[in-house]
Length: 111
Length: 110
Image (cartoon, rainbow over all chains, first blue to last red):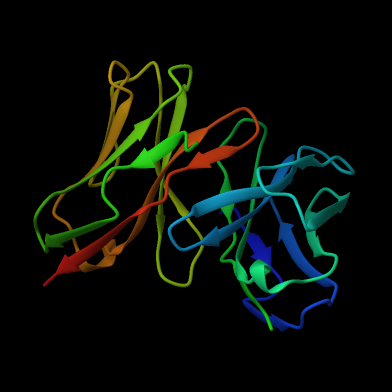
C-alpha cells in the first residue's frame, strides 16, 4: 500500500512564525502536492513538484513556499504565518499521470 | 471558476438503500475522473476512477457512470452501510493536478 505520512496531525503556531509542514512518501512517486482544505471550498492546490528540486505554483501559492530536496520528501513552508492560513493541509503523491494518494492531513491553527 | 462541481452538498440515505452522488464538469476535453471518499479525521481515499473512453465502471458495491454528452458523472453505492458515511469528492485528474468539487456529505441513517 502507498503510504503518505505527514509529520504532524495537529499544530498550533503564532502569527508571524515560520512554519514547516513535512510530508514523506514511500512509493518512489515522481509527483508530490500540497493542498489546503477549507469548509465549503473543497481542496485547493497550493504547490506541486514533479521532480526533485522542481516546483510549480498551484492555484493559491501566495504566502507559501515549498522545498523538495529528496524524492520522498516535500515540505510546505509558511514564511510568516497569518491567521487566514489556519486550515487543514493535505499532502499527496502519485506516479507520473497516475492516481494521487493522500496523507491524513495536518490541522494547523495560527493564533 | 470551478471546473468540477457537485450537485448537492449533503445526502441522507437509509441503511441498505442505494446512494447516488452526482458531479458535473465543464471542460469537454477532460478525460480522466476519480472519486474519493474522506472520512472524518482522514485524508481522501481513492474509490474508483474512469477514463473518457468508458461510460461505466464497476467496483465493489460502487459504480461510476460517465455521460460525456452532458459532462456529468455519478457515483452509485449499493446497499449503503454506516461505514459509507463520509464526504465524497469527484475530481478531474489533469496532467499535473486534480481539480476537486466541493464535496457531498453522505449520512447513513440506521
